Amino acid sequence: MTESTTLYCYVHPTRETALRCNNCERPICAQCAVRTPTGYRCKECVRERQKTFETAEWYDFVFGFIIAAVLSAIAAFLVTLIGGIGFLLTFSVQRTGRLLFSGLIGNSDALGTARPEPTPNSPPRDSE
Image 1 (cartoon, rainbow, N blue to C red):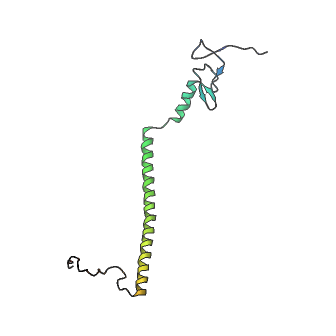
Image 2: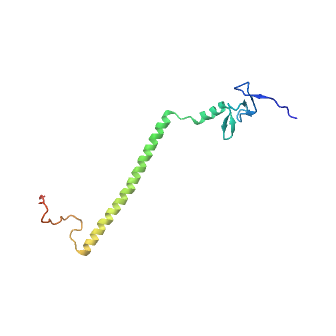
Image 3: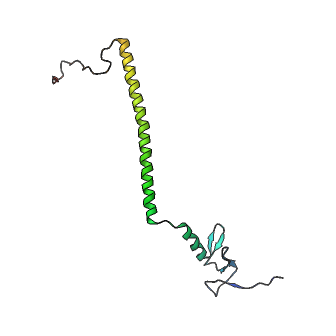
């Protein structure tokens, strides 16, 4: 048969335990155990793991903000460019359609530069 030895928590030497840290194999009690996705670990092993993930310095955040601002400006410029092209195409199609339509009906004001005729109740126009 196997010989069973009583394990005591390495932090609380008076507490018996059957748990071990799955990283360093030290005996830990229920109070010292931290549950992780891979099993129970002691608080020291958990702290060591957190140090590897929490390595950002203050300038990393500034650098990230600057990169995000530059990329946003580029995206805004591209959207404006695409939107501007769409506006220019729409404007040119409207202008071309007005020119063609006015040629068919014989309207001399194809470009929309003529002034409307004054009505009897309209105020007098300033001469240019």
